Length: 456
Image 1 (cartoon, one colour):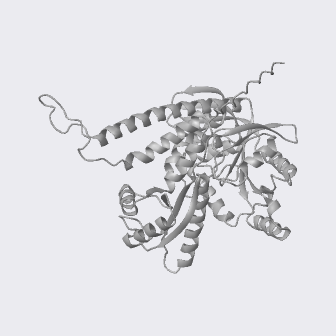
Image 2 (cartoon, helix red, strand yellow; image 1 turned 135 degrees about the vertical axis):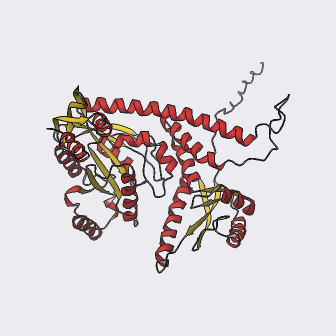
């Protein structure tokens, strides 16, 4: 009887999927603080708090902190920021702990950056570079990537370091002999050209956003915007209010691209709720300028929800940083509701102290305490949002502007709904549908004189 043929054994298929492995770098943190007179202890506390925040930023960027050092000095060393002696101390400490890079909690000049890299023998970055790297990781939309790249190039341009004439392009022929164009000049020209292209692209984005805002205003959409310090729980609150599925994370700057969802109020009205990028102390000015197209969404908001992590020990400093940035964006006078989030992490006594402190500051009717995770206080928050949106109704108003008064006219077109326009000699008569707060703002910006006041 013939033996049965053995079945052919199939070879196991090779797994051709690409496995991404995250490589964690070891980072050593260095801070610098300037004590002023008798406030030495306060200066040290501020320096330690800033270093702790830098530690959170470093973890968000995908690095492991292996040590830190805080230098206290009356004046910053123009060559190395921390001084030659302290630089050698940092070099020995960082190398003994196996650090791959050194991160400074201070903006470094090109000279300081070059001297520190030569003296430490390690890669050196400052706070601005770290934040820009986090933003580059988080950017998903085309708009966010454009804004991050523009901020990076504006930061890099003054920090380019040339190599003399080693990379020069030699000319040929009469009148072209000599060193020619240096590599540094070539790099600068390319970066400036790229900056111009990015600025034009972002300008196009701003014009599109302006059209969308005008459309929402014409349709009389109510808009509510979330603002606050990074990692205050804005995205979690956004999901809880709108039942959206926006990704959340405990890392800083987890949300970068703005998101808009429909918010249903108890009065059966509908509003648009937008989640924006979180704020932070020492936010790089290049980043604020690049993200102005995104932050302009806050200008047309009917109400700002200022979200604060009530359980954070430095919540007052976080609120001060948000107030400063809102003033820079000229939004300090916008209608606002202060939302204390994460009250589930507070005891009853701490919560009572927090709410009593809000009443002492005059925020009693403009503050709410919620927990976006457990849902506590969300219904009361929605009722309060509904009431505050009623406090700023739309009205049709007649305005009269001088022909040269372009500032108020542009503000009216940007934030209001212009119904008709009539030009009479050097006067412009406009009828528009605006909120009462915008009407009062336009009247407050009017130049002295009977003809420049806005009419009703």
